[in-house]
Image 1: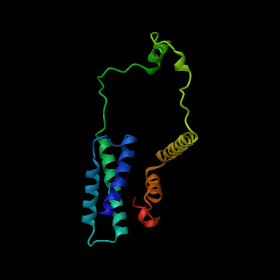
Image 2: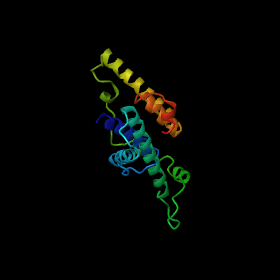
Image 3: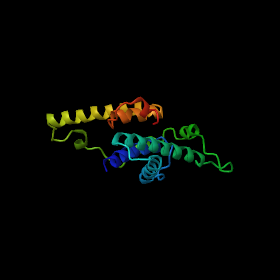
Image 4: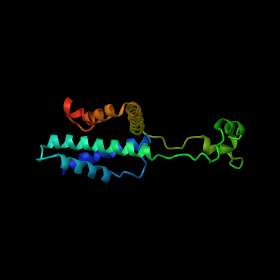
Length: 179
C-alpha cells in the first residue's frame, strides 16, 4: 500500500520531532500505534472509499489528531519532582569550585610529545577528496540551518511546510487547514 509507506514516513518524522523537543517520551507511542489509530479513525469516518488524494489528506488529518492527543495526554503525566528530594547544587557554585581543574582533564603528564605527532602524515589527500569533503561540510551546514529554522516554527506551519516541500502534497487551502 503506497499510502501506508507515505503515512509512516510522515508519522516517523513527526514522532522524531516531538520526541526531540520533549513533547513525547522516547518509548511511547510507537510508530505502529500512531499509524494504526489514524487508519482506524479514518475508516470509521468514511462511508465509502475515497480517492487516493482524499484518503491521504484524511489519513494525515487523523494522524495529526492522534499525535496532538498523545502530546496532550503525555503532558498530564509528565515527570514530577518530589518536594522532599534534596535540592541540586547550583551550577555556578560547582563551576567556581572547579576553577583550574580543567587542565587535568586534557593534560596527561605521562604522555610525551613526539615529533611524528606534530608533523602531518606523508599521505596528502587529493583534490577530489578535498572538494568532496568541502561539499559535505557545506551540505551539512545547510541542513543545520534548515533544521534551526524548522524547529522554531509553530507546529502547524512546520507540518504544512514539510507536507508541501518534502512530501510533495499540493497546496489546497481547505485540506491543509485541518492539519
